[in-house]
Image (cartoon, rainbow, N blue to C red; front, side):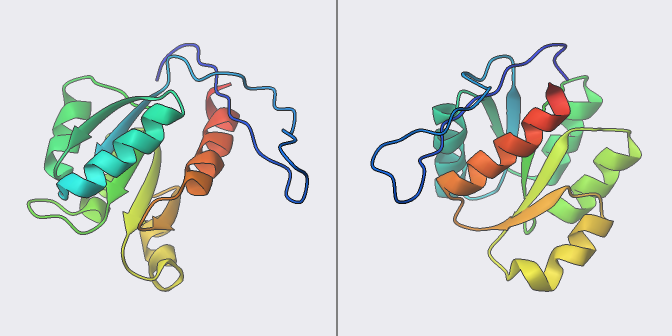
Length: 151
């Protein structure tokens, strides 16, 4: 993980016109994300969301490539891991990454019902699980959690 990072985002207060809640994080710097998904459209959407929030983002199309990146010495603060992919699925890739000692925040992304599968995914080493399609609110929640880890 990077030695120093700053994370920021702004939340609107519901019911208040254009008022922004004060947030100690003004910008995202030196924070990296890895998107692991076999669908090119989903890859693009996830990259756009993460880039809008200032994260440096790399994309691979299966879990094996994600594991290979970490084995080569690459590190990422956040990993968005599709759970259903060819070659190596997200659950198996997460298990391998955790066995390697990877401490990155790994969030499973699934088209299935999250509640039904969340316990199994967390047992595999995922920090959280969100349902596709990814929303800006979900990204902000991830950044909140990530801020607690890297700052």
